[in-house]
Each structure stands twice: as structure tokens, then as C-alpha cells.
Image (cartoon, rainbow, N blue to C red; front, side, top):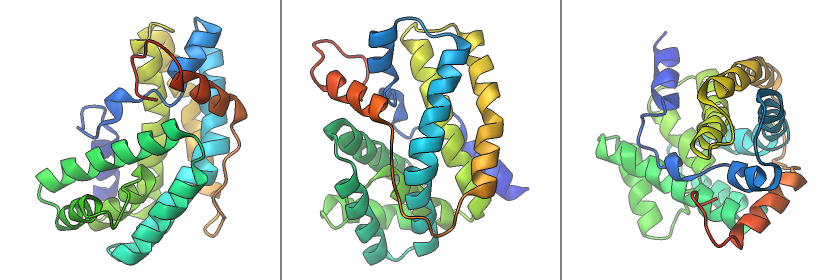
Length: 222
């Protein structure tokens, strides 16, 4: 039960992890499409979950979870995440979110988060979010399944929150979209491979992110 409670705590939108400033590509897509229906938003989230989160963020998070407090291994995963994040918004967003996540846990007194914060400041680690999540959640005594559930839910709920803040969808409609993708997170966690190589294939999101870089007015950083 403790692992479930820890996952709820970390997935709570009130946790100060820096994700408030990031739209996961929703801002650029809302600029292209305008209003989003519950179905179209759910379809977008499903695409990100299946083709980005499950195959890239989740894989790196699980590897970091296995690495635990081995900073050398975590630094290698950080560099892999950096190399595979071709677009600047993805790279900077992941590093900013990861740095905020680590800083929050460091302020809460977690010993590994304190070490990671120092390693990021020294340039030994880059601080990418999935890597930092896996390491810190392992230190907090999550089990792996709880860590995967928290990671997947944070991704989905972050997109929901961004769509609502942008006025692309109403709050209740957004919750309908979120509810509809919960079984997808469950299935991806249940059937996720242990040793998969990280990969990402969301060209529409990537194109939207590239357009977002050149926008004159932006509410979100990515």
C-alpha cells in the first residue's frame, strides 16, 4: 500500500516539480488545431503514451530505477537521453523539469536528491526528468510498478492541465479524456518490456515543437 500512496503523492499536480511551465507539445498543437474535443485530446495523449512515453521516457526511468544511487550509470543515462532528444524544446524541457524535480526532493531532505543536485550543478549529470525520477523514486522505496504508473499518469495529467490552461478544452471534458486513457497506462505498464532500447516516434509532436520554438508569444516553455 505504501508504494501506491507514494505514487499518488508524486502524481499529485500540487507537488512542486516544475512541470507547471511545460505543455508536452499541447500548446503548439492547440495553435494548429484550435479547440480540442475529449476524443481528440485523448487520441493525442494516447499517441504520446504509446509512441514516446512507453518506449522512451519509461525505458529510461526504469533503467535509472535499476541503477539506484550509482551516479556514474545515471550520468550515462542522462547523456543517452540528451543525445536522443533531437529538438531543443524536448532537451531543455526535460532538463528543467528534472532539475526542478530533484531540487524539490533535495529541499525535502532526500540524501540521493541532494547528491544529484550537486552532480547537476557540477556538470556531472544533466538532470533529465525520467532519469531523475527513476533514481529518486527508487531511493524513496517505490516499487517499479508504482514508479511506472506515476510516470505515465504525470505525463497524461500534465497534457490535460496544459490543454485546460490554454482554453483548448473545458475542465470536465478534459477529465473525461484523462479517464479514458487510464486503461492505456495500465496496459503499457503491465506489458512494458524490461530490456527495450529507448525509441520515440511522434513526428506530429516533433513538428509542433519545432514550430513552438519560433512562436512570438508562448505560455509554456515547451
